[in-house]
Image 1 (cartoon, rainbow, N blue to C red):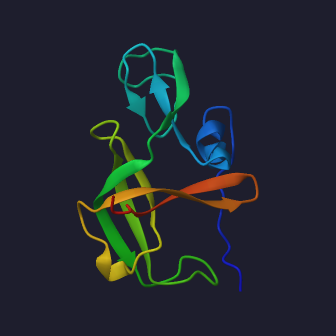
Image 2 (cartoon, one colour):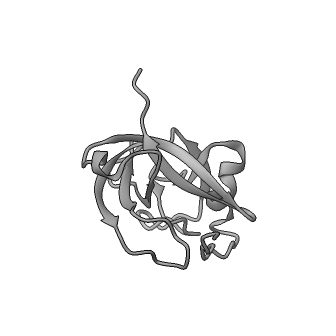
Image 3 (cartoon, one colour):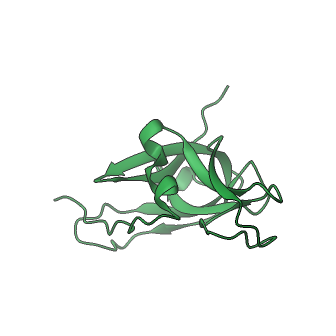
Length: 136
């Protein structure tokens, strides 16, 4: 049975974020006036009030700040267990994304774990997920 996922409604402010996975990169809202990234995307910078915001590609590298392992499905047919995590991107302290950790046994996920971006494509949305960072 296919998992039913409620997809985000695309609008002018968030479309670049939800569709950037098409090219394999993660794009985050950035204020050119004060040099700060912001997520979720907003039309006005919450730091300085500037309207000079745009979506810029980021490295897609981060670390797990906190997480939970869910053993109950949220929707019919959803595979469990799954990991819901907050990942801090390396570009800026406090630049957090709520996401899933994939391609990793749930018991291996830990706070401080280095992760990198991946995407799950559904309809016109590329959902950002993170997987353990490959050893160099």
